[in-house]
Image 1 (cartoon, helix red, strand yellow):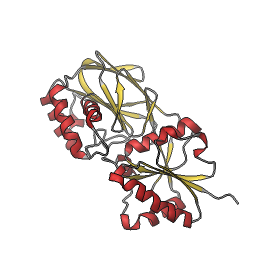
Image 2 (tube, one colour):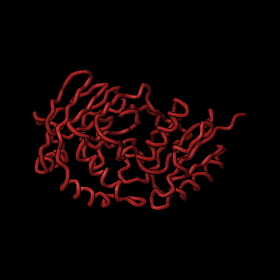
Image 3 (cartoon, rainbow, N blue to C red):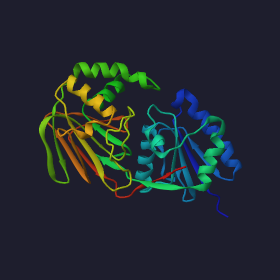
Length: 297
């Protein structure tokens, strides 16, 4: 009889060290439930081709959205496919966990995770490629990405929401809002002018705002939002409107969908993917040919 396996990938510094503790707790429970369990605390890019077996029932990822993206990307590169993914949130925003609808409670965590793997309710979700890099949630181009890049320069270990305060202040001081050009499915939708842009699969953003309120993660399309933005004052105005989803009513904003998005600029503009810095423009975004399976409640 083939014993089904469960792989656990844990960011060892996630939750200020809680990632390892949670992984060990889940190991004990899942082995008692009859699964072969393999646990990895290394960087996802260190995984070998035999890290996942054909009998893998689920892959648990303990960490933030960036850890989830890194694990999924590495598995895709190694195997060309990904077993069912189950995120346990220990990051800053934890957008994917929020989107899937899990509400983990520490005292019931082992039992709830075991139940989710046993029931194995799967929801296939779209994923994107941005200049060849996988993303699961959203790409940001412009000011928000500049904040993420600034944070990368100063971060040391785990971060929290307040960690973004200094990078945001620096970005407000230094960012000069370069012109962008946006092409969706071969059609020019935004001529060179100062703007910020978002391309994504889900409506939620790291701030909790629905920047892409019409986005569906399984419709086979990327949602695009381009906001004209010439200075700090205009940025703050859009920020406040987005907080109440009022930005969608402005005829100055482009909200559309497509399968391929190209964003160019007059000079390199920062890009972030799922909250991680990811280079600069020019940027080409497309959908992954296949959806990724996620375990849902």
